[in-house]
Image (cartoon, rainbow, N blue to C red; front, side):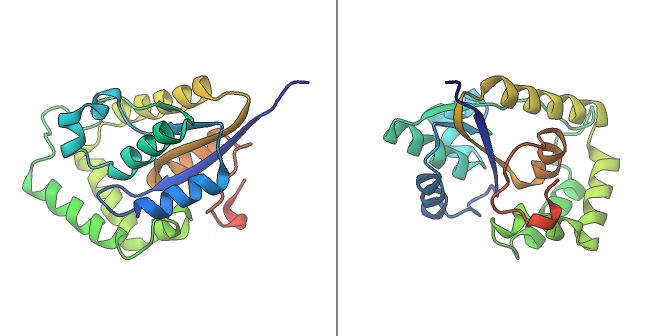
Length: 189
């Protein structure tokens, strides 16, 4: 008998905005056969761990290692900024801080839903950031890479993918058979 590939996708928030214990409890309840975590391999090193904004991803990765769940990372150090943009520009930093402030008014589980991302203030910020700072070709290349990595790393059994909640619409569009346990049913394809 062939075992099917079940894909469960959960969005998180970076920058200490996803409670680690709460995330671990979700993972324990799901009991995945494999966990895919949105991290670049370089972020697993001791020095990078200290500065990574993806602390919840590292906590989930460590949980999998500790409990013996198969785990892989699926991101890379691809830069999606326009040429000449460093991310340190004052206007870029201001946009980032305003976005973070808006996003912090929601829980990580709420940000698995579509409605918060459709808030007019956040939509306007995202559009301004995209126009000024994000290279659309590099961004599309990263999206394709993320999708391909996920598709190539899933196994027969229950696969859980942890990804920044901002990627959920993309994944739902391209992985229509996946489950999104914290996404409202009306938004699921």
